Picture (cartoon, rainbow, N blue to C red):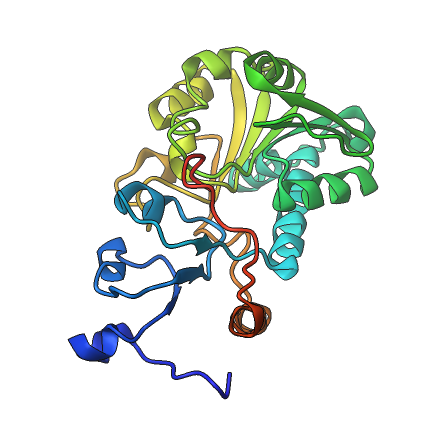
Amino acid sequence: MPGEDLRSLRGMSEAERAKVDVAIVANPDPADLTLLPNLKWVHSLWAGVERLMAELQGFTAPVVRLTDPELARNMAEAVLAWTYYLQRDMPAYAQAQREKTWAPRPYVKPSQLRVGLLGLGKLGGRAAERLREAGFQVSGWSRSLKDLEGVRCHAGDAGLAALLGEADILVSLLPLTAQTRGLLNAARFAQMKPGAQIINFGRGPVIDDAALLAALQSGQIRHAVLDVFAVEPLPADHPYWTAPGVTVLPHISAETDRDTASALVAKNIAAWRSDGSLPETVDFAAGY
């Protein structure tokens, strides 16, 4: 970005901050953006912007999320990898190793399992494609009804109930909004198949933690792969660390790629300088 003057907010004077027209951020303290009185727009280096949406009441500058094809590829890869982990009963084999038990388990083909995706945006759509290529049956749920080849698509409350009832493995890629906070609660777990399994790669608070722990204890949910949490890093005394049936990951399912993200941000800012155009911006009402 040879034509740009790039500065760290922390090292700028009040007069210098007044000259800033674009902010490039990664999970910032939202209050920092109020220190830039002439800000025209914000480019996030993360796909999730829920903290900005929740804490910047009255903020009007457009916000652009990172929509990097490499991020979508990484997430689709992670969804497929951990779906295989559950399909091949890897948690059971890990437990058998701890018990020093030689215990082969019956093989279940991908075609015998239905994976339900919560969220069918750019990340969910790419994940659905990879799962279909691998032979899994795929269903998906989104705020508005989508039409994806080979995917049984649902929307609305009735559609969510239908997807929960048919999924052997449920994958959440949902952003955190007022509507999705606590979406997967005791009532929704009760709608799922007994022994269904869960992967959460979206946002931690989409799941009611106490309800999931109870569903795991009762056997309603057999296993949960969790990569995102309400508090990160996950506190050492959190029950998830030792709960049977939980795999804890340190928020690594789809990290921002520095090379591709940098190039994308530079391209978007250059386009805006040239003709005032912006990529798709966040819907403040929807929260993403």
